Length: 437
Image (tube, rainbow, N blue to C red; front, side, top):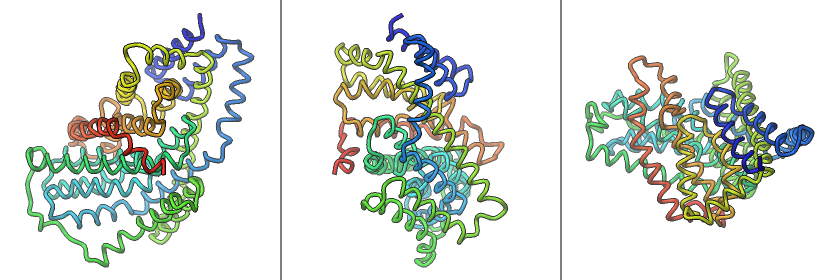
């Protein structure tokens, strides 16, 4: 067998192992070891495995992962998410479907600190959904808004997926963070527009019972400042330090984690062993992410050795498919895999194959990363996997709430995300203008 044939067989075997339930990191390591053994020999495979374990995780940059995860968990437990929602609810209380738009706005701000979509889905399913249902919104619409807007956590910086992409594509993490701002604002606007149009032309999909806007409570100036100050302070500390050039991404993560810890302490949110639980959860998330990164590095080196990415590039770019045909095919595969595999795993499986082809096609790699992240995030909302949907179902603990109801509620936001992909493809500067300054 040729190297390219071995590479194709390795990809097929990897997908088969994942579908039958093998942990993705273990499957990637096993397939990579077998692929190198067939291409060269077992001795080379053992040496490569050792060098991957040593080289892939020794970078200083990887310290950013536990720091941002810790910051997100501390912010979640300290009630900052609820306060952010309260501020937006007060500001938009007289706008038609304003609670839905408030959820999008609060999620966008919350995303600028947590960087994890599942954290946003968990927080706002408890905060926003009961409030929306109480004020006459359909439960399916309310959960759909929370699930849809939760994806902003992986696009608006800091973002865990942006870090993963930056490592795989050898791009600057800071530039990738900057590239998410424009698309994050675009997606927030599209979500708000979707809510407005639904409330205007399909009110039966939004409202179970329309209440007067005056029924919604407002906040005074002092209360607004009290609730909004913590999240604004953290945004200023992390994003101001990062984009002002005072802190690199790892230092910004450390500063943000320290700031989130201070907020949690001042709010007395760390009693009853919660700090220990948060530290353990941070460790678990970090280890799982870094193990996947290590496995993906091995997989990437095996594919490079096989010559599969270069061969695919020649076939796709020189034939009738062309660069844009490759992009459409790639995004379709990403969205389909999102139905069955989690976001990070999709990127770690596909990027070693796709990045060389994208580079050969002459694509801007920062823009390509943004397109990838948006497409991956669609998978959080689509059946049967839909991780954000199942997170909301679990957090709500409502036996009357069906998973299918939540999935139906997310469909308008899936369409909005597809529209965002089209807009970003036509106007790539939305992704790149800040990153290239």
